Image 1: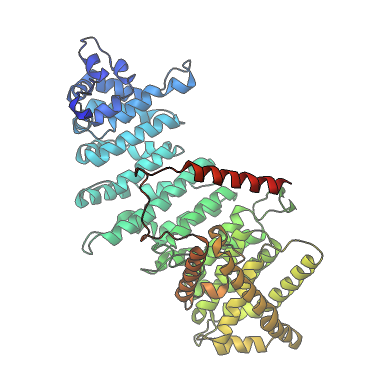
Image 2: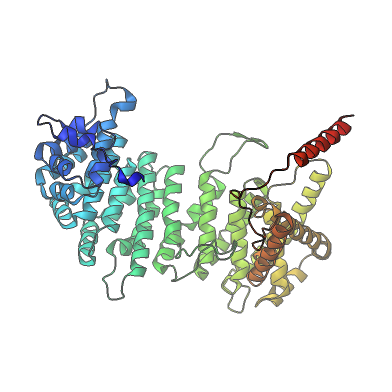
Length: 592
């Protein structure tokens, strides 16, 4: 057998190490140097951990390679050096984390003028991040002695690697008491306030975007870790600052102060949306449009809402006068006035605010006629499904949380629920849009892109009209419609909408044979998304899918004996010749 032979070959690295004059570069030229390092090759590790080798490795990841080198090989050695330093070998970690001169060389990289080389920045961040996780106390103690550390990291925040470094400081420090010390240190350094200031219009967009993303990640990380910690653990100071009314007000001031740029508005709104998030739990069942896949484990901090409320008029103004955008050519023609990212983010913010069911916020939105504007945009931009989804969420929130919106007993002074039917003319606009689409399709045109969302909105109204805590109130609002409109609505519900739902449901079941079509935006029936019917329909569809598979896929019979391909069999050549002759005759008859 093959194991009787000694097939082991000595690594060429060991042969190189036999030489007294071997250099680090020669070893790094070897393809298996990383493999040997991670395999704890003792001779290699002792060589690499020498002072001159460690210094050279650190210099490689912090010094710009000569520009005259070929581009594809220019960063070869820095990349290998980074992999060696972060190979998670205790001997290298101990040497790097325990030698302050090496840490000083690493830190000097931050003292360069921006912009940093993005590759070198990633090597630096990965190396420091590994040390934070493996030699925590030594590295944290070293960094805390540096008064300008946070300032230097923020100075280079345009490099995404610096964002990763900050997040490692927050999430990778153990044990818990030391982590709390780090959080307190970062809070004392005003990290949150300084990141917020970077979202100001005057900063370049890359810095704004990375600062915004860092704040969003800090919020999510802090909330996740807070949920995992015991109740008696000290509160996260960074999260406390982020959720404070003063901090949110400062962010909003940064967004709207001076000339308003789309980048500043979008990046600031993303932080607000993250603050308004509740704990993610993933999609329940197949899809849940109205909760966006979230399940509340706690309510939104009221201080966040108090800070946002005075600036709702600023967001309303953005819907009316957004940052100027040049015309763009789309697949459906030239769009003279694009919706823009700023207005889309305002729609997302309004949907998130309505989901909080805060009466004062809803009343202010009603007073500002925000829903009127969003519905106008819904019908104006009939091909922007990102916008359609957010407007649908707004309508769903108003109908599903109607007690807070004035459809229940405790109505606010200007209820947004009745306004949806009266001033916004939701029913009339659904009917008009449907008729316009029918005329377009009758003339050979394409079906409008918002019809799927319009169908679900119509079904939401019908469902709340048929059952629910505010059934009578919605019924009264429908009765208040003009007689011709009420007649059109009743005919629409009984005929057009019913037929659309039936057709969509049939199409959904028939397309189960093609999984890629199952989740088509226009084929998912609203009843399929309704919470009360979700699990039963999922079971029915799973049964239909299984039946389809059984019909189309030949089942293997386990009871049938498998043919032994090695079994000796008698070969009857005469039978084979007759079979071939018969096959030839059949083929000849087909060709004639």
